[in-house]
Length: 417
Image 1 (spheres, rainbow, N blue to C red):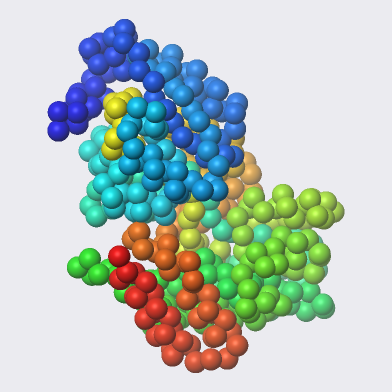
Image 2: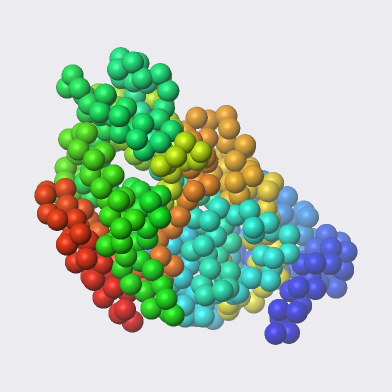
């Protein structure tokens, strides 16, 4: 408690000199060790941030260490459990990983800090919601990425399509029109369950629901079944395999072959497409995944990163200052512009307005969601019953029956502790 009170005094009193963490602070220097993931930020960005942060926080030095995603979960867990002397004080984690780390009391509760002037009410829900565990905020949204529709402008023109669709009904009609003359209206793999999740959320359904601390699968709800039915109708307007996901084969390669009008993917996939087919340089377009009505884009799964502070840090006040700076408007906007990400707040989306793919992604991010905020969700994904359910439906099995079966399996996995 004494450390928490000290933290609140230090971060709120911008002219105090005793804390040694703010401009004009004391002479004692502390080092804040920050773990960021590979390719999350450019070295030029990190160099500029470090230089300016240290200049504005005369008592702090930054030690930014770039980590690889492979094996990071085990490495983070180890850091949260060991002595803090050589460990990180701030860690970038995937937004859906926060609950796993928070469950074992390994993270600092940042609820009070996030309520001061961090604009938490404006955070993208797909980053903010999985950053909470119980009623506490442990993960602070940093950046986001989500799926959009990547399309061939030339194939749209040939089909007489002059504008992207705004609703599910328009999207189906347009895709059917494009699915002719040897072209696929859309390439949608049968087990692209992240895309299905967005359709389920758009209909008002859930992958799983929680009541009194107990999680249950919810694929068998009427709303979730409507989402699966829309997926089935859209997927039929192309030749995507019903028994594989979007990486088997990689959909970038399928799209690059030149017979596909649309795919659903993050805008960054365009680089892989153009590497295989440079002739498409001027023919790629982007629009947000449509919703049920024209008033707003459809719900989508939001991936991205949150920043967390280990509970065992010995530089709590400095760690909080680093999180505040990286997630604040200035540096967050700069990161989004530099790396083609979506900023952590919808109000900052204008920073991406100059790039078509990122602008489409930012528009969809306002309706972003994340997987259920329970550490056991990783067990669901390990042997994913949602994928198996999708294949069963797409090959003619009764949707309601298969949905009940899949929901039971999700419930069983979420109950395991």
